[in-house]
Every structure is written in C-alpha cells, then in structure tokens.
Amino acid sequence: MKMQMAEIAKALNTTCEGDDKTIITSVAFDSRKITTGGLFVPLEGERDGHDFVAGAISNGASATLWKKGHPNKPEDITVIEVDNPLTAMQDLARYYLRKVNSTVVGITGSNGKTTTKDMIAAVLSKRFNVHKTQANFNNEIGVPMTILEMKPNTEILVLEMGMDRPGQLHHLSELTHPDVAVITMIGEAHIEFFGSRDKIADAKMEITDFLREDGEFIYNGDEPLLQERAKKLDQAKATFGFRDEDTVHATGFKSYMHHATFTINDSEQKFSIPMIGKHNVSNAMAAISVGHHFGESDEEIASSLSNFKPTANRMEWEKGDAGEAIMSDVYNSNPTAVRAVVTSFGQVEVKDGGRRIAVLGDMLELGEKSPELHAGLSDTLDPQIINEVYLYGSEMKNLYDALQDKYEPENLHYYTQDEMDHMINDLKNDIKPDDIIVLKGSHGMHLENVLARLR
Image (cartoon, rainbow, N blue to C red; front, side):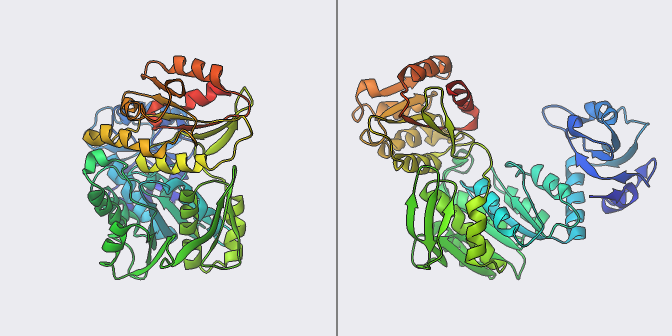
C-alpha cells in the first residue's frame, strides 16, 4: 500500500495531527515489526499497544493511530485519533480493498482452510496477481492486516476466514464482500462454543451473508448440513466431493506416502498433490472448483496443484534420529481432523518389520462433550493398522480407557501433560528405523516439541 495520511484520515472520517502529507507504506500492530513508513496500530488486549508506541517510533514508524482520551499521546509523530484502533484498522482495510478493487475469494471450514487457501492461491497464481493470507492469520485482526499488506496490483485476494463464535464470519463477510465463498467442511472445531454441528454450520454459512449477487458459493456437497442451507442462496452454486452428483467429484483416488493422485468426473486428466489423504483430495477439489470459476483449464490446475507448497505443520514428513519417518500435523486438532489424518496414515505402507505409531495429544475447545469425543476416536484405531499408540494429555485419558479392550498393555501408552519428557524418552527407546510415526494434537499441546526432540 501507499497512501498519504490525509487520505487515511479521510477514509476514517477524521483528521490527523501533524504532517498529513506523510506517506504510509505499511501497517503493523506489533511495534517490533514496524518499519520505516509504517503506520502503528496500538491494539488493546492482554497488553495495551499504546504502551509500545515509543518502540514503534524507534523502529521507524511514521504515524500512529491513537485511541481518543488515552493518556501520553506522542507529540513527535503524526497521529490520527480514533474511537477504537481495531475498528479503524478494519475501516481502513475496507477502504483499501475498494481502492485496489481486487476480486475476493473467502475460505472457511472446520478443517482444511489453510491447505485449501494455499491450493487456491497456487492455482490462481498461474494467471493472476494473487495475494493470500499468510499462515492462518484469519480473524478480525488477521483479515484486515492481510488486506492492508496486499500490493496495489493485486487482482485476486485469497482470504482464509476463521471463527470461534457466532457473528464473526458475518463481520468478516461484511468487511470483504467476497466474490467467491468456499466452505471446506463442517466438523466439531469449537463445538464448545456452539453446542452442535448444526449451529457450527449456521455460523460457517455467515461467510455468504455479503457474497456478491453475481458471486458463487462453492461448498462440500457431501455435507447434508451445507446442502440444506445452500438452497436458501440465490447466487450461483457449485459442489465438490466424492458423490457423482457433485459438480466436481473425485474418481480413481490413490494415496501414497508423500502424495495422492486422483481424477475428476471420470476425465483423463490426472491430478497429483504433495499431501496424502482423502480429506486433502477434498481440499484440492475445492481449489479445482475455484479454478474453474476463473476459467482455468484442468491441465493448468493440475500443474499448479502438483507444485504447491503447504503451510508448515500440515501433514509434513520429517526424518527422526533413528531413521524413522515422522508425519507432523500439530497445528490444530478436532475429532474430524484426527480421523482423517489417522486414516490416511494407516494407508501408508511400512517396510517389513516396521510399525505405525500414533502419538495423539488432547483436542482442545470441545467443552462438555470432550470426554465423549475423545473416547469416540477408539473406532479409528485398529491395532492391526496402528500398531502402537501414545496418548498425551488429561482428555486423552478417555481414549486410553476406551482402548483397553483393543490394545495389549505394552502397545498402549498414556502420559499426563506434565510427562512430556517421559513420553519422549519412551518413544526414543521404542522407535526403530523402519517405523513410521504420526504426531497429531491441538497446538496448545505443543507436540512440535516432541518432533524437535525426535529429530
């Protein structure tokens, strides 16, 4: 971006104090990441961003937003006073998005948002100037920041949109007015705050609240909750999935250790993605559907998908100290995601004498249903397929109890949250070179530390 402070003040319907000809080339709310020409946004949360304005100035900030009435307003920098710095940043993002006039693709879903976002960006980058959400910066702070970071020549903005409460996606949809809205699937993520999958589906559908009249809704056609709700929309619709009735449906699916292949709609074009599992093929079909919306050919899309780079910690294969292969998927976790990852992992071939070992950490934010949902994972674990199970965290005790009749004691291990070192030492003593390991748990369980120690 590149705007004078006078234009920013006008966009925010106010005036600025200081040099209104100051040129702003970036926006940041972290004083450590501000650069010369940057506008500092002091957000109020666990810590008050206003307390760090001096650091922002020393790092090169050219201007700052400032909450009206907040003490110690700086005098050596251009200032715009606002009622709420976060709301002002969102308003500025809304203005800048209209100014650049890029087409918006919004993506949400209980699982697969980040991978699908990466796939869609890869597909569209072949023909268009694309800017996408970095990592999973997908909330009411991350979405406006992503908008403000895009270059003026951006033709398509690919936005991941997350939510953990009703109304959040309604707000993000109003902020962005997507031209294409994508829902990957409905699972149990954040069910603690919603109570049921029906209510999660209602909240996910909020992404379509400000879908443009000539826009398109692309959704998982194998999910009855979405089929039912999509009927209420007047905009164009397309589905993806594994049913013949889906607009884009997978055929000939095969999963290998490092990639998966498939065709669609019985066509001859073969697709390959550098990830495994049926759920990632579903994500790829969402990306194919978006590619079709923008006129991409299957040949072009296949080429893009074969080379796309997924965001870190999504089913990445690593090598351990003993020579074992480790699949790391430790960014987040919920029952749907665990089932998908464990099922995919169970399809990976092992060498003679090698074992499949699962290390599973607690799934967080499941509320009062947590014991039941953890225990319910027992139907996904078969000792003939997943030979050893290591369970970590207080909630995983429910799964440990549920597996007592399926696994021999020597193949089933449980550790409390203060026993990570113990678990890692046991793993190191147990793992053989031909074994393969999967690590899956919510980010708050920090299984990335297990990965680091095993490497």
